[in-house]
Image (cartoon, rainbow, N blue to C red):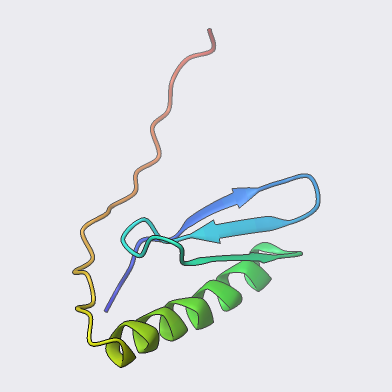
Length: 71
């Protein structure tokens, strides 16, 4: 499965979350750390859904970068 991951750069590191898996989040010092940790978080999240007998949501989110002029 392929899930859209949103990465956010903060003052002290990087955060990541998965719109299609509410509550699935991770944070790391670097972008690469955050991606590695969110991959593991996705796997654990899906395992938890299976254990609880819940369906795994189909990935539906997409991302796009939109360029705009300065205001």
